[in-house]
Length: 437
Image (cartoon, rainbow, N blue to C red; front, side, top):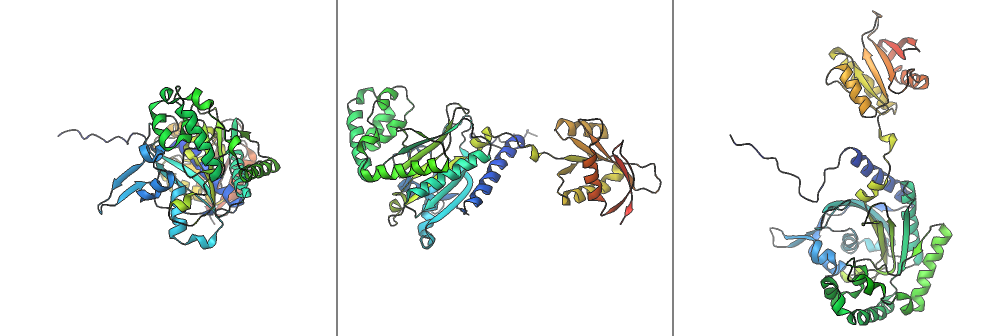
C-alpha cells in the first residue's frame, strides 16, 4: 500500500496557534473595546465580490489590481475576486444596501483579506485586517476622529513607543491635477534613469513613482516637486484643520510630503503609523480620505475617510498578555478523581477563575508539563486520610514553597457553595471535601 502524502498548507498562508494566536486575539479584543468607545458600528462583508468592485475603485494601474488580486471566473462565468481590502466592499454595500439613509456612518470590520504577493516576515497572501471608516462626512474633524481612534488603539495595545504618525495632504482635485502635471514633467526629464516599473507608471499613475523602493528611482523621486506649491487655499485650510485638531487632541504627528498611499481614490489627508521594529515593512496602520471612491462605483459624490491595519503585524509588536494564562490547572491523582476534578473546574470557572485540567499521563509528568507551560499553580485532587471525605484538594504554587493564602481562600469560597470544606491545612494549602451540599 502506497504511503499517503499529507498536503502542506499553501504558500503565504498560516496556521495561527499558541503565542501567535494569543497576540492576534489581543489585537482584535483591543480593537473591539476602542471602537465601542467611539461608537463605531460593526459590519460583516462578503469575502469575495465582483471583480469590478475593486478594479473600478482601487484603480486599474495600482499594484493591487494589476499584480496582486486573486481573481477567477465562477461556474456562471462571472469574474470574482477575493477581497484585497475592505474599503471598496464597504462602499459597494453603502450603495447597494441603501445605507445612504444612515449617513454619516461610522463603521468597522475585521477579517481575512487576500493578495498575491511575495511572502515575507509579517506579510502573507491570506492575512487579516482591522478596518475603520467614516462615510458621508466631508468635514476635516472626521479625519481627526479616525486618527484619534487609531492613536488610542495603538496606546491600548501598549506599542506606542517607537510608532510614529506620518501625515500628508494630497489636496483636492485641482491640487492633484496641477501636482500630477508637474510630476510628469519632472519624471519625463529623467525617463532614461527610471526603473521599468516606474516608466510604466509614468504614463498612468506618476504619483506611484514617489512610493518606489527601487534604488534607481529614489534620487529622482526625492528631487521631485512637493505638493505644497500646488495646494489650493481650500485644500491648505482643510489640512490645517486636521493638524490643529490632532494637536488639540494631543496626537503627535510628523509631516511627510512624499507620502501618497498606493490607491487612486485618496484625496486630502493621507497617513501612516510606522515603526522601525518590523524591518523594511514598517507600516502598521494606514489610510486616508477617499472622496472620489463612491462616485467610481456609480454613486453620488460622497465623502469618506478610513484606515486599515494588519492584525498579524500589530500582533508582532504587542507583548504577550499574561492575563491569558491559566491561573491554575486541576490535576486529578488517579482515574477515580477525574469526574470530581471536572466538577471543580466548572465551579472555579463560574467564579471567574481561569482554570484547566489535565488527566493524560502520570501525575508527575502532568505537573511538570503544566510548570513548563507557565501555569503557576496546580490544584491536586487526591485521596484523603479522612475516611468521611470524598477527597483532599491541595493547592501547590510552582514558584514559592508556601501556597498563597488569599488564593486558597478564593478557591475555598468558590467550592464551598457545592461542598463542605473541612479542616483546612494552611501549611499544606490543603482542605478536605466532605460531601455535596
